Structure formats: C-alpha cells, structure tokens
Image (cartoon, rainbow, N blue to C red):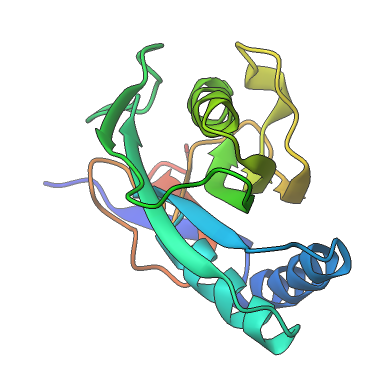
Amino acid sequence: MAEQRHVRVLFGEEELAKRNAEIARDIAARQPRNLLVIAVLKGSFMFAADLMREMHRAGLTPQVEFMHMASYYEGTVSTGHVTILKDVESDVRDRDVILVDDILESGRTLAYAKDLLTARGARVVTCCLLEKPVKRAVQIKADIVGFECPDLFVVGYGMDVAHSFRELPFVGVIETGDGLS
C-alpha cells in the first residue's frame, strides 16, 4: 500500500500575497533604474510572477529574465556544485537587477548567480522568498527576505520534491501517514 502524504501549510496564500506586496513596496522605495528582475528557475517562478504583479501595482515597470541553475537535481540535498542550464539573454551592465530565488539555504546558487551578474556590471539586489540560516555553506546574506523558514524541506508555491508539488498555492511541509515530515 502506498504511503499517504499530506502537505501541512507553513505559509498560506494570504500571508504570501501580503508579504509580496510589502517586498514590492520596498523595492519601489529603492527607486531602481532600468530594472530587470531575474528569476532563478525553477523554484522561484510563482514567487517571481506574483512579485512582479505587485511591482506593477507599486508603480514599477521591470523587465524579466530567467536563469536556470541546478544543484539539487532529483534529490533533497544540494550536491554542492552549481551548473547553469540557462543563462540570461539581456545585457545586465549598468542595470538594477533584482535576483529572485525561492529559498536561501546553502547559499551556493544565489552567491554564484550574484557574483556572475555583478561581474557583468549589474547592480544586484538579492531577494529570496525563504531563508534557512542554519544551512549556509557560503557567506551570503539576502538583501530582501520574505520569511525565515524552519529547517524543514518545503514544497509548493513553485518549490518541489522530484518535480512534484510545485502547483500548490502555498508553502508547505510534506507529512507522511505516520506524522513524520
């Protein structure tokens, strides 16, 4: 018999929407010039989309690009090696860039992307939906953080485990039938 899995809500839809609006107002207050949002795929796509809609409501007109990097592959633990699967197409030199990621955990992916974009001449502000400060493997602090996250493996709102659960409109924790996560 297959084990039953339930996803417990950690950060709900209303909480996410409220925080996205706050983050967008924070970004607008920085008065960015020639703004480019770069979403790190795949996990940040829902956060980035909602955040960009809130940026519009805050009076900003960002362009958007995507970077696809991998360090987890099929597992739940980072391999420690970051690979670029898709790079941005735009020239980032002399642009204000909001680098949007789903979760700051080991920090490897965010640090790699920030260093790369900075070397290309961008002014980079890092923005992560979630932060797990206990798992940091490299020295990096996000400029903007949505929520501090407990040391649990989370899914939903674009984040997955083996390509499942991305569609959930909230951030949650998988619980098995025995109550363990």
